[in-house]
Image 1 (spheres, rainbow, N blue to C red):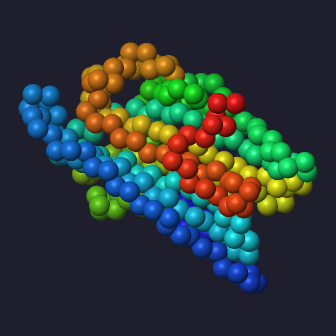
Image 2 (cartoon, rainbow, N blue to C red):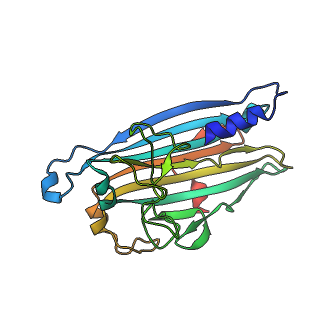
Image 3 (tube, rainbow, N blue to C red):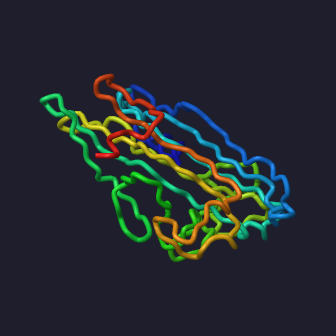
Length: 266
């Protein structure tokens, strides 16, 4: 999606003096350890699972460097021995932290706002969580569930099972794959100095995620933000990722922070 947006912007501004760019800031791959006794847990049809976490910096054509947008481009890839095994497993994701706006006032103070909302279990709420909650937009706790469709419909796949291109992939709700590899893709941006605002303003993200793989038989059909009915001790594997980019007005740049911002506790 990013490449498509950028190429469209370049094509639509033929007179641009400065070209746009996409820079990979970092790439991290986390792979599930090999199962020691899959017979005992009845999970031998699960061949592998991995998280690919790319941090990227996007600058549109003719845009000053200070207005670059920082993004996290995620792939959670699951490989099974056969397509029929896909629906024996499910992903549940937890979110903690916040997304916030910041504005530098004329007196030098910074004003903060929490207006970035998302749908969580049917309700739209600001992303501002002091403790982890289940990250799902509906009653079904599965990350891949799509309201009005099926529990696995937000998986994607390509003809070449090694191809993780999300833009041209086939959605699971359109057709199941002919092989046993599917992936869930996510893209988070919302970070960087905003152009054209009366006072210097920025969008900031300071969120952490934990994504866990379960057997479907160990998960409830419905839950709530607190994860009622979900026993994390039954997870086959969990891994973490984050999107923590905050604009620092004193330094005049976006900082990738290690901890959740204290602003989230305001």
